[in-house]
Amino acid sequence: MSIPPAGSTKDMWRTWARQVRTNIDWEEMGAAVVGGLREWIVPSNYLTVLVFLPMSHEISLVPLMEADQETRFVATRTPDRGGELSVHELGGPLEVHRLGFLQPHESARPVGPDEIDVALLPGLAFDLFGNRLGRGAGYFDRLLRATRPSAKHVGVVPADLVVDELPVETHDIAVDYLATEEGVIETA
Image (cartoon, rainbow, N blue to C red):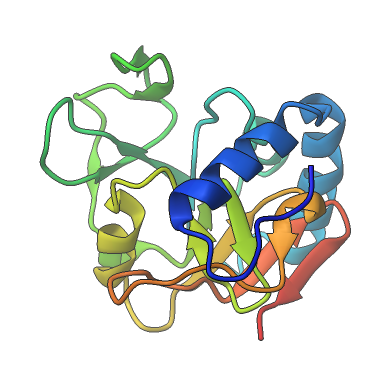
């Protein structure tokens, strides 16, 4: 499927990205991306790393967490209706959100967004400038605004879903790096 033409809406890009994602071997892709992240995230350089627990058609970062016992990994809890993402320590029980993905149990210790050193973020697609095409709710954009200025924001995505340019709105927050099966690169 060819990429949408210039001037396409975010919804058109989401349709394209979802179609491309159906043809990806997620287990193989995850292993390659995690391999590059292991080299880039050196234990002790980063104390607190925000990860995402994958939905279908997303890269699993579980092998990264299993291989690194020195880093403090945290993840988000998504509100059932409205509200904002909250961040919680991993290591305790998980629960299934009503949309079917895992998240830290409500009893997990809360973590302030300003404690995050690196945020590893999912997205349907990213562009070379670090702009992220999410699912449309804006949860991660609002969370990233609350991280400290020195925090590194990293989009985790297959290289086939990195395009030259995506549509951007004023509330969108770009990432600093992209982690693909080809390694971790700085955005333009």
